[in-house]
Structures are given as C-alpha cells and as structure tokens.
Image 1: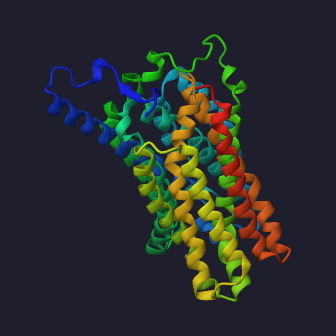
Image 2: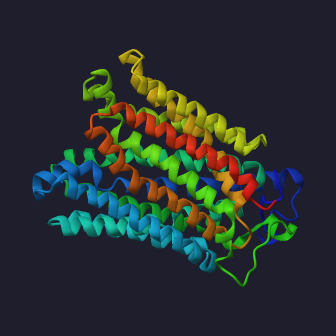
Image 3: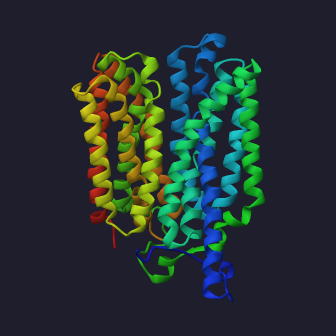
Length: 423
C-alpha cells in the first residue's frame, strides 16, 4: 500500500495497549466504521429508487405520461450531480459527519413529499429533495472511510461500500411494492420509507463516534506526498487525473444505465423471450456485481496494479455484453450472460475507488470525490435517452454493444490515470 493510506490520530488510537490488544481494537473500530458507512450508502441507493417502482400507480392516479415520469429521474440526477460536485467543498470545510445527517434528513423530507403528492408537482418536489439528499454521499462516505479505516482493510471497505449500494438498489422496489400491496394504499409505502430514513439516522447518531472524520487523518498529509496549494481551493481541477477519473465514472455509469433500463426489453427483442423471463436480468446483474465486489476487495488488498485490475475486469464484462449482442447464444443463456457481466463491473469496483483515492491530493478529498462522482449522475441522466432511442429505433443489440463500448472507454480512462497523477 502506498503512502496515501489512512491512519487514525493518536487521540483515537489504542494507545497504551499491548500490540495484540491494539490490533483487535483497531479491527473493531474499522468494522464499526465500514458497517455504518455501508448502511448509509445502501440507504442512498435505496432512495435512488424512491419513485420509479410506483410509476404505474402515478400513471393510473395522476394521469402522467412516461415522458413526465422520465423527467423525474432526470431532475433527481441533475440535482444530485451538481450538488455532489459542490458538496465536496462543504465536506472539506465543515466535515463529513454533519453533512451525512443533513442528507438523510432530505430523504425523509422526500418521502413525506411523495406520500403527500397530489400530482406531478408534488412528485417533482420529492425527486428534487431526494436528489439533494443523494448529492453528498460519495464525498462524505469516502472522506470518512479514507480517514478512519486502516490501510489493510481499506480495499474491503470499498468493497462493502459498493455491495451496500447494490443491495439498496435491489431492496427498494421490493420494499415499496410490498408495503403498497399489503396496505392497499401506495402512500403507506412512503410512510415506510420515511420511517426507514429516521431509523438509519437514529442508528448513525447512536454510533456517531465511529463516523467522526474529525478524529482521522491522512498518512500522506504527514508523509509529504502529492501536495496542493492550500490557498487555492480549485487547484485540484488542474490535475488531469481528476478528469480522467470523472470520465471513468461517466462511462461506467452510462453502461450501467443501459443495463438497468433496457436490458430486459432488449433481450426480449433479440431472442424472442417473454418480458417475464427477462425481468430478473437486472437483479442478476446486481447480484453478480456484489459477488465481484467481494472478490475485488481481496484483489485490492493484495496490492495488485489498480489499472491492470480494472482493465481485466471491464474487458471481461465488455466481452460478455458483446457476446449477448451477437444473437449467437442460446436464448436460455442470453440473460445469464448479461447478468454475469455484472461480475466484471463489480470486480473493478474496489480498484476503481482506490484509484480515485490515490489521485486525490491531501486537503481536497471531498472536492475530488464530489467532482469525480458527479460523473455518475451525469452518466445516468445522459445515457438513458440515448439507449432508449436505440431501442425505439429497432436496434436492441446496439444497447449491449453501446454498454460494452462505454466500459472499454472507461478502461482507457483508467489506464491513463497513472500518467496524469503526480506520484
């Protein structure tokens, strides 16, 4: 591990303990921080899906069109993307923990707005509040993880962080649909999401010491690694590595957007499969991605080349997507192949997060993560109309080819990060 590894300050270390006891205490602290940030990140992804699971209900009750509902998604990610870049500056100045609680409060407010909505305006407010709440999570999460988790477990921390996001995405539709079905009233689903948000706030407040970034530090701040002029808060924008990481996120998220939104109908059109048989492809993709992230965490811990890890993992995923696009495989295997591509993208996840960590100069952690991860929101907001147009134009295979090309573009950006970083 290089000199940019995270350490705890003496005030928060297990000073005075025997080496074995100190190691056990550090492990306990690491696990607590990783678990709580995983919970917070999973919650943020859960609220990505606050509105989409009930889109058919909004069409029925409010007479909305799919274009209007698509605008809700765009509003969410535009606000989240802009807010994420700005939130990084606030995190660097004010600290991560208070911003985390403010973000979760926005999710509770978004749930209330959705539950009380009487039409498109109310849903628009809910989407805006949820996007605002989502915006600080990556600069907050990674600032806390990088400052509080010991070097040996940082790769695993990034792995858990990614897995929790996939779990949040997967649980949200089940939660909303189950509550609305059980109660007979979709508004109770948003009462449930509001209570869930409050419960997460309560847990994090109870264990708030474990997410206090004020008690952590960067080893490279002391070791004199890459420096950034403290008097110039925008100096980090001159670093090519920051924009290469931004591009990496934009392309990988564009690929994910294609799979999340259009894999099912594209497979149905390509292979003549019923939509009922392809509906769970996205779930399989996320499940395989979670497995990949677990293995990817161990891969990073071994100290392998991050750029090489990413290249191998994304090449596997791209090859599988192109195979699915070819139409040459048996229909029964097509969905499995697309789902398996999620393993490759998941495998790259921890290496991706570590790559960004190494590209971040000391003192600009939140700003760098906020700027880089805003590429995620832009990728989601911009890619869906493009891939939707390909499907509308009768080119279902192009959805998978486009997703594969986006991954290969991300691979190229990652391979250039080392050249653009000041070691």
